Image (cartoon, rainbow, N blue to C red; front, top):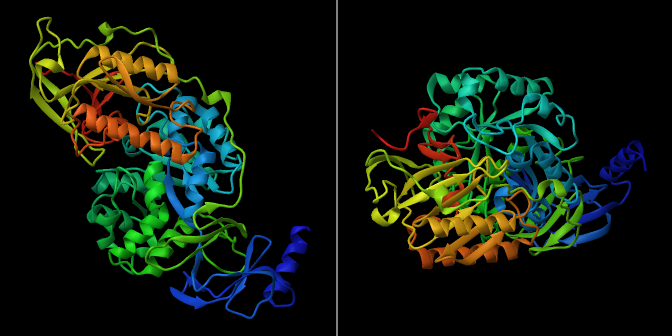
Length: 579
């Protein structure tokens, strides 16, 4: 059937002259345009909404048993890689919860594998029913002070800008380059503007005229608001605010009090970074809906924020509402409190019921994203940290936040003039090892308020350049954990007294596993349990996620890269020792 014939068919079905393909009966429909709840039934055909609230006939019927039909949920900003799952496994994980469309920024894999990594994400996503809209990473690396696996310039991004599935320009983290209109950043902004694409933002702490200048660059969203003042200022400047409820960063409840009937249409829901265990136990965007309603938001308005607002913000044609000719991406929930998805539809096909997938698809892994850990032969000597003074700039862990503290601490040298955690109770040694090109570059620093004892933890998930991060209280265990990481081709490793207590292999770019979400969640849970019980880590600090964000030089205050300490507020490198 041609598209012309299909449209004629749909018009006849809408007029009641022909039977639709599916009729959902005994249902209530969320009308996001009028902010109302309307009685069904609802008719579907050719993957589209035919109509609802009239006496339609269909070849098949589905009794919703009094449930509420709403548009498929949309995640306005997510990094698939941060789930530790491949795109095909990530789709299997979130679709049963009613998320049918995501705006994905693959800057994690792009920092490791460049354009090949983005192409892998595109091809893998195409294997699934999930509608994955890819935003081209704008900051690879996040700053010029990092050593990533690849560097993507505007000319590189231009190769993919017209590729199906590419939707816009990803979060612009290098806000100084926008404010100072650096040539490299301006070319990327112009690339997006020339192709009429949405530009995502990332501007924590930017205020006043600097924020105005940043928004002037055409940046339409921000998911880094943590206070109501930040939110209101950005809405006033015309931005959409992505209300984040991730595993580490949880801003949704802080921002709900600022939502009013006047500004609610500028709000969107997002997860940014979510762990598989979190998703499997509490849900995905439907979790955010549940929290929003629990804390006083009108249910229909909350659904609008999770659907129509996101569709309009990201210019998703025929999505985000239930109306004739809109895509039949839907979910049916029992109530507007729990938002538990009973049925999930994509393109008119039921793909999940009662939390279980009804369809299957093949997995996809490409050689271009494997074997990405390339380091020289390391020895214990590579972890020695000479001190030229007994006062240092140290990174202070701030539990429950990706923000760190810039501390100035007194430390003791050992007999060789080195920093040794054994001589400095409560402090750990932190190392970041360049792992893409085997340069041998290692940044060394001092970590406070993490409190790891008698061992080491190493990871290759380290935003955004994803070099190896290892923390410990002795060099031998730090080296052993790094060697284990190298053997696995990336992942997480816990070492104590020379023995690997637990590890998780992430062979896809050193970031993702091809295992099912439940297996990955179980292994991560085991690792966290071992780390908590065997290493004495600060109980208020996540043993792994704390390290994952320790290298991100666009999140205040002090970070460590493979080239050394970085003062985010001053936006410049910083010496370890204070003379």
